[in-house]
Image 1 (cartoon, one colour):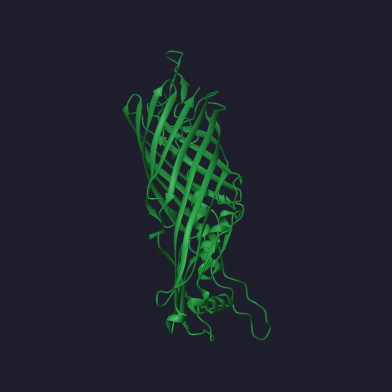
Image 2 (cartoon, one colour):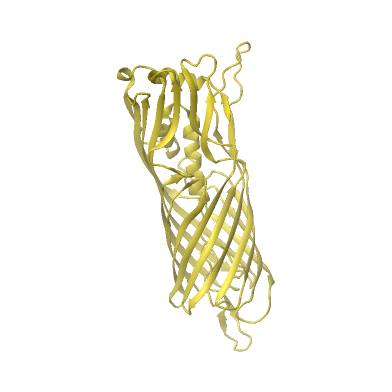
Length: 418
């Protein structure tokens, strides 16, 4: 879709059309900037705020909505009426990122720790290395330009979690993410002859709390009696608190509440599970998606700038656990997230106004008023090292991802029940 040109576009033309010998320059980001401002300075060298907003939004949504992993214990215990002893409810150790209906058991506790490291390679189908940000097409090389960027965006997340069985059917848990985000980039602008006009280089790192998660799970249905547990259905509520810095992309800066239905089944070596839920956000995240409109000639009033707002998401998961050995569970999960209302990033064409200064068309990377999906395959295993201690290894592999993503994210963890 094409949209009318703006004041911002005209200013951009004025800057970029200065002869290269006079305007060629390098811009280095300043120390002390937030990561939001750093990405803005790196990407806005093509002359538009929407480009920076689009990249900031994509990064924040990926880092802050990535799955933290389950807070449920890999061990669930129940009193065997035949022996009078506490025994494991299931022969498998449960999924790592999805949830099962089983609970830990009354007065039982577990603590977990996991670590993941992601190097984001793509935005949708586009590589971050040499990614085109925008282009002006004019009636001469001097009125044409192309802006590209090479961004390195990384995150490492250490999650400390715990769960406690309040009753046989009620668990409460918490997950505290400690997040490190690093951004490094180079943006270049060249004219229609390929001559250098300007560039920007810089980066930054931020470490600290992410958005803490607090969860409660209530199992209200059991499929049968006896052990191993035949499975059942549970209701889970997870609240994400705005404890992570939104300016440094470690959090979204809003309250989130996820309500999910959890189901799991099976008595044998295979135990399937599935989840579906809706996450409500107390407010949306806005990004500028169009250029500042030209003021009305008669009144001088400037119309509202076009904005995109992302708010709420659906989450779902399905998978299976396989008892490969008494102390080894193999896992495979399929995770889905569907962010609503907006946030997908793509190119949009804009039409210059009457005074186009020789520019015939302009295309820019912007946040679009479209939601997007993130579908992820998660293979892994859990190994009972000793006693009630579990070691887990998983990989997050995108199957379909229209946002910022890593092509392979390893995750390792420990789970100790007592």
